[in-house]
Length: 236
Image (cartoon, rainbow, N blue to C red; front, side, top):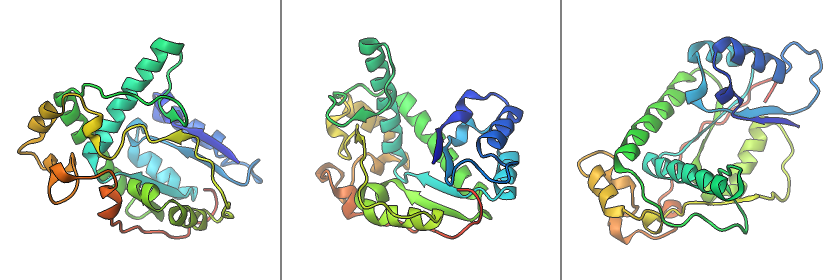
């Protein structure tokens, strides 16, 4: 198995990304060095979306699209991940973006309401681009809460799509850094709520018919996702 994580972030031009894609995925090799070759990339880091889209289709690279429909919680989680990375860098000299199991989680923090709203709008735009930009590309769509709420079933679908055997047990090394009920994570909650009032995002900060009555598992109780799995040949 050969994997990589967000290499596109480090490459500033489309030519560099094309070169990396060709080399990493061994697109010119008759027999790849690994049965499974895959990478996780950020849509924002793709320098030329249309050209990259054409390459993925041309080379038959299977696409797994991961999204989170609740863009407010996505933005909060991203901002807190950045805060955690800053904190761990100050304490250890190394930036950690995810909380390892057993490690101390990030305490409640201040979330800048203006930055949050801009981040929400950016995430929504990028997710729409991801979903519509590959409309004619055979893909497996995974929504974040599918993994949270039905991990085994989601893993089965993913393995089936990639054509690989399903492992019996998975070891997940990281814990959820920001709980579904964000009230314990945002120190300036009232200011954040006020910023979202009047926007289409207002109802996403909390869950349930009565936002203030939401519980930690409401995301799973209310969860419903329509996914589109399907086979696609060659590399994963």
